[in-house]
Amino acid sequence: MHSGESSKRVRRCLGCGGCLLGVGVLAALVYGLFFGGFGLGVPLEDPLAAEILEAYRAGQRGNPLEITYPPDGTLFPPEIVAPTFCWKHPQAGARQAGARQAGTPRAGADAWAVGLEFGDEQKGMSFLATDIQWTPLPAQWEAIKRRCLERKATVTVVGVRRAEPKKILSAASITISTSSDEVGAPIFYREVNLPFIDAVKDPSRIRWRFGTVSSPEQPPVVLEELPVCGNCHSFSADGKTLAMDVDYANNQGSYVMTRVAREMVLATSEIITWNDYRKEDGERTFGLLSQVSPDGGKVYNRADIRHHLGMALYLTGKFPEAAVHLSEAARLDPDNAGLQYSLALTLAALGKIDEPLEHYSRAVQLQPEVDKSATPHHFLGINYAKAGRLHEAVLSAQRAIKLARDAGAEDLALQIEQQVQRYQRDLGAKPN
Image (cartoon, rainbow, N blue to C red; front, side, top):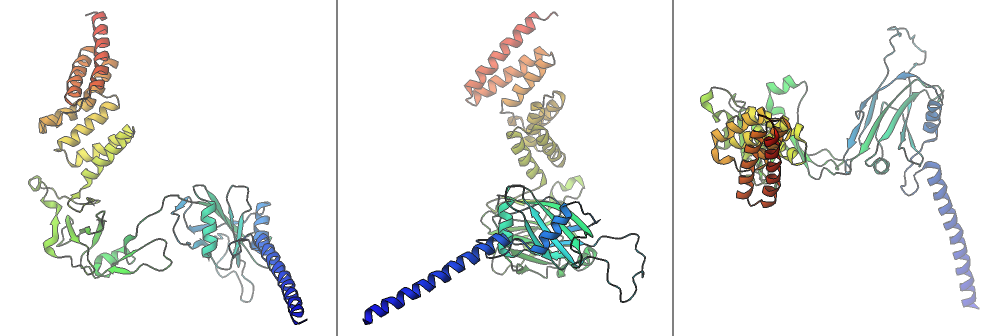
């Protein structure tokens, strides 16, 4: 009898619990469907914002808004925290100063609908802002980033007065998207007081911060009270070496390399100057955009960086872009034989003759042993043949064959030999 009563009470409790559970699930489902945020715990649709956006899409238009952040076409890294979207009131040119009398309501918007469309089959999102800025909640921002991953989303901001939500006062749209490539590392950056002229007068007020784009907290200050202006900087791959431009002793070519430690002092003994490079020329040299090597053992200057970038572009077949960077590098460092040789190779790949010969001659004049590649001679042979200069085509191709065999590239040598035979046949058939 006692045990039977207990089992009845248990069944009654389970029954009530089942009803409560069912009601809870139904409520959650309704909430998710109504707000579009099912599974996130946050709303992705505001009813008033949706009504405003519907009126806008139906053809209602107002004055143009200016969305000041983010810029149109912004590509966000996937791990970045939610940004604050900001916009400006439209400038009503016809409005006279002081035209509004005291006690009369303002004509401007007091509510803004923020809508997002993703170009997919799912429903868009809508949010309501009561100020000229809006920051998504973390879960909302994660949902936005997922839906615009490697695709554009259109963000529309529409201004109204709450009393007349279907009367559009102002509007503007931009696009944003999310990259699939992460930043993947903390960022070391400087915080400069504005206007910049004030920061130049007292560089010790400039502070450097270090942090990740995924942190909602402001990155901590890690370097301050630097008595000189610090500029372009880089770290070695292991993070143990810092290199930085420093305008020390009124020398804009000054550069410092130091070991990274919990507490660091930039000592004068660690400062070098790019002005020591080719001092006999009597021209000042700057280390702008220099880059410390991955092992922290040396620093590449602009010519080095452009040389490596140019050759990387060459290897991907982007010959015109490669030629631009290599030409600039050669201008910065005209006595670099390897650089001159690379430029000759790239210009020959573009089908040119006279320009690659000029840089090739400069390269072998500076360093005769630099001429080890069959490729520039192979290209020149082809270019000569296209220009009808078959005798020169044969000579260039024969040089290419020798260098290919010296390098053990027998297949390439045989391929060029076949071209030489064609050149010689054409040369024999050509009248004197």
